[in-house]
Length: 345
Image (cartoon, rainbow, N blue to C red):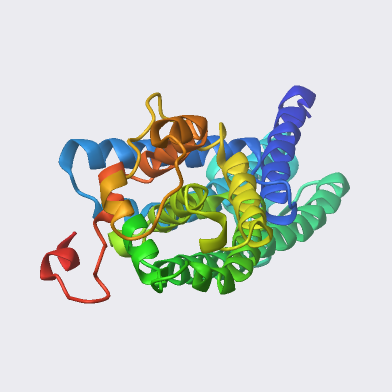
């Protein structure tokens, strides 16, 4: 037996199995291989989108990356075990000819052993490899099951994310529309009933995102359904509420928990998946907002300068999902009228 070859295969098995276990069973996010593979694939899709303008390709991102990860784990474990088998010429024997198996025979043997299909016309060459075959079979059953069942909670978490996005959009598809719909002629207190629920849902999504970072790559091509756009509109409303007289806006006890929940989400995606934009986005149009609600005497530009770093992060999040800041208002008034062009975007 060639010990260097055997331990090289063992090291590869540890790398791929550890990445699978950390990603699928740990609440601490993705493994190293998963994280870098996902980021690289998404960058490729974003490059194609920027060059061709084909947005629909981004909607395939989550599915493509998920299938790529499953393939990487399964092929990686298969290749690792094959390398260990190749460390000894007589590790696998042909039953009919009683000769050592060829390279392709050993690849085939390792594959159907890991998939628990049986031994076919090949058998282990020594008692040592008989024990290893049993371990391969047991390992394959466990890892294949883990890899496949990983899909179910990811799909469930993605559905919850879309539910949250739709909930936010029911309040309005832009900052101006949210304020307009909430204003009853006297105050914005109708928003307060929604804030605790939104806080809970955003915390839930943040935990899901932390456990299943692949959620970051599930993209919708419809602007009004895009989670990052709706979340940004919501955060922009929270920033704007500080400029509304205190007796005409929701209480701080309702606003601050939601604000902190969004902050927690942004800290989860920062650096690993999203980098802040170098330039801050423009503030909302003060004149248009002032036509809807009364504002305090606080300086508009100074107030938004205070929140500049946070808004840079939100702009970075939007760009990473293939959108622009101008898209924040693209879905406005869609609940009042239907635009056929929106269906083609």
